[in-house]
Length: 188
Image 1 (cartoon, rainbow, N blue to C red):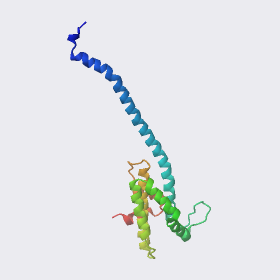
Image 2: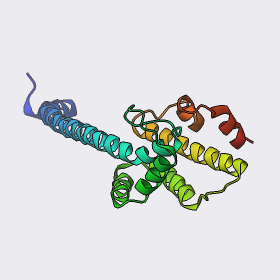
Image 3: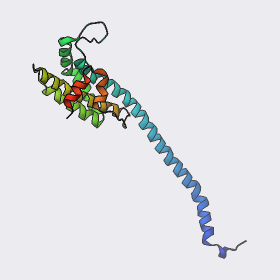
Image 4: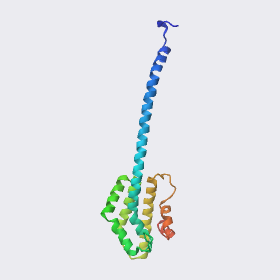
């Protein structure tokens, strides 16, 4: 057994290690618990936000679905066509206070891409004219469709599909009878 004068630095290091190890383990456990708690809380808030986003996005998209639906389409399948009255109803809805409230809410809960694409879509809507020329109407419909597709794509990304390979035209292809005519009108 060594005497008091023969204690080396290794003995001090061993003594320090035996005291510091439990303290270090306790500190790291506390830090790990805090990180885990923050991540769980963030995931919980994201789930709540996702539900809120879905509801808001549905409200925002409804008038555009009405605008781009065929004239003989009906919302409930009851055979009641929208025609020009349905288009007017969609435009009225786009300018309503309730729609503005939903858009305001979307600007708070939507991702940057969603808000930017919605802004572009609405600016196009505000500045689009009611031209009687068939070619001008087709150009207008093509641009509106493209912007709506971009908006849908940004919504898709904000809902967790960041790595999507789809483009704005792929988002709306399923719903347009004259898809290729409209897309080819916009493609350079």
